[in-house]
Length: 385
Image (cartoon, rainbow, N blue to C red; front, side):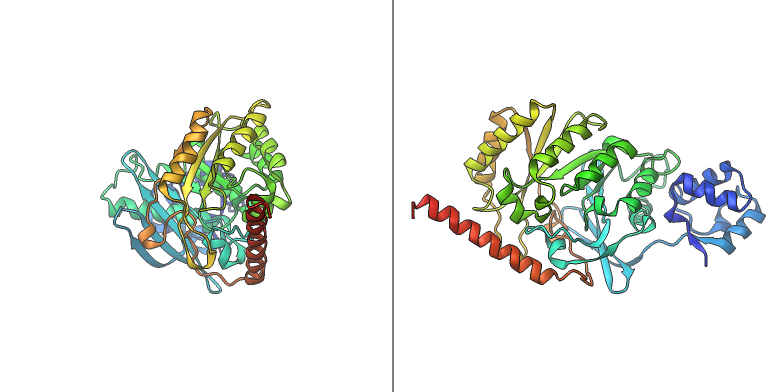
């Protein structure tokens, strides 16, 4: 059986080439052909000896993911669906802006975390993606977009930023994520800055610490609540790694991070986590941890509704009032612009098609019941019942 060379970072490819009796510089040449030039046919790699090309043809291949469909939004956002086998389909999104091009990449077929406001979580979880399946999304998108946008100059990068914010919890697939990150950062690969590669996590504390040691890129944390009782219902992983423990890990990460702050994502849910008291609780929480060295930026995300969630988007005046409380307290705060929602490519809408193995229907039903019970308690307290 031949191996897919998209599964290797440069060190892995060097080890593979050594097995073929080749020196390291041959691995570098091969790596450049694959990632910088988008080559998949070894016969195209003309600066490799014919004997090596023949060896490679018998031992390896370069196969990307099977494209199922492409959808383009009125705002220029592009969403691709890729078949990863066994009935699983994942999604990848390109978001063009005047000063950058951002690719949102999936790390799993589905997601086992099961956040209430995330369409992927409602699909359940099938499996982790391989390194090759993760990096293949970038490999395909970069070289497709060069042709699509007429940019054949290899020095002119189309994708300037990568965010691991697609389907899945990246840090629950750490062994496959890490080599993929190294390919993104490698100057012989895509040459992306650590500041321009972001891993988003719902809060897998031990893996945050490992990432700080192994490959510290920009970190974004899905917070979405100022206290544990609410976050337990919105982000079930909070029951294992509560907010205080998570923020301590973020403080430790900041020492190694390429930016001088950690980004916290906060999905604005009408009547759930968007009230002034929630904003004031966030201010108090962040002040406590700022005293311990944590510097933060908040990204408020208007919820992108989908039928199964049972949740509603906060009104824009409510979002702006929430933002003002944070800003007045000196917390850097932005409101994310919704992109690609007309093709279900906006934040929280990615779902693909997943063969669930985790009993997601029962888990989500239990979460909804817990949320409803919590709302009833709050209403009773407010009415002094």
